[in-house]
Image (cartoon, rainbow, N blue to C red; front, side):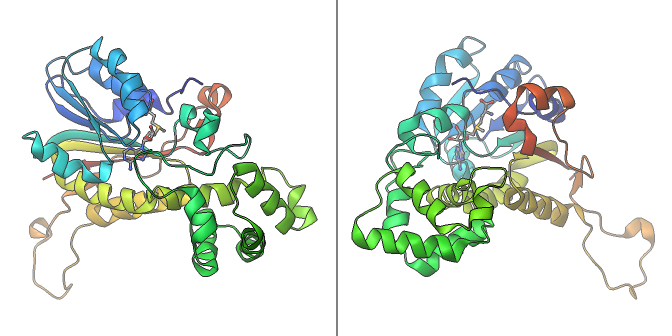
Length: 310
Ligand SMILES: C[S@@+](CC[C@H](N)C(=O)[O-])C[C@H]1O[C@@H](n2cnc3c(N)ncnc32)[C@H](O)[C@@H]1O
């Protein structure tokens, strides 16, 4: 399935692209954002990362048709500092992260991301990594599983679901997505099963986040990204659930507040230390009415943007 880029215009405009600037797209996917960036930096360079080799393969031709000033990197965005350094880059003019899974990853049944198709329990964005959903579901301690479902899925029935998982896997390993869906259904109270939204949604999100260490990845990338910016450079992050958005909001808030000084110190207002970054928007940007109609994935999207001042 085709991936329709979310908040495409809003995020690319927010980067304030300079024709000869150096930019990073940490989440290449099918290259929607990267293409839009490349069109606007004829004399600059784009470094685009994806941990999924198929994203790199699929986007290669499309991007090189626009320009040769792009480098595709098969790596996690948490390694951006090191990967850029290898290529002689220590500062950049802008960074974009469009988090989560792409539509092709979600819709390719055999990747195991979706609770709608039967597939082996996989959920790896990077198919070269060893940790899979199978390993987590079948070998992790019940306590750790409850933690994952609570923390990453905000699933109120985590304990009930894990109890059913543990009892099922004692009989035989849980091999597929639909087996897991049945187990989740069997654990949930009847009234929850009739609620809007798929009953396995939160558990699948939680396991996917754990398989791909998504929050650790984001934490590291936020830190590195902020450091990598030149003054005037911007960092745009599109997130799709509250855990990610909270993390982005906090990280951006922290660096955009001036350092706190003892109020008793005799310092003139003009001499007060200033923050090194500023929030470009106080509130996150969300999808327009039109985008909400044609792009289902845009419903939960939030874009936050920060600019380095000095
Ligand atoms: C939502 S899609 C990006 C779509 C893209 N912006 C477009 O318009 O086509 C997210 C992509 O980021 C990749 N990804 C997610 N987490 C990553 C990470 N930590 N490091 C590198 N790539 C990551 C996924 O493999 C996926 O291809």
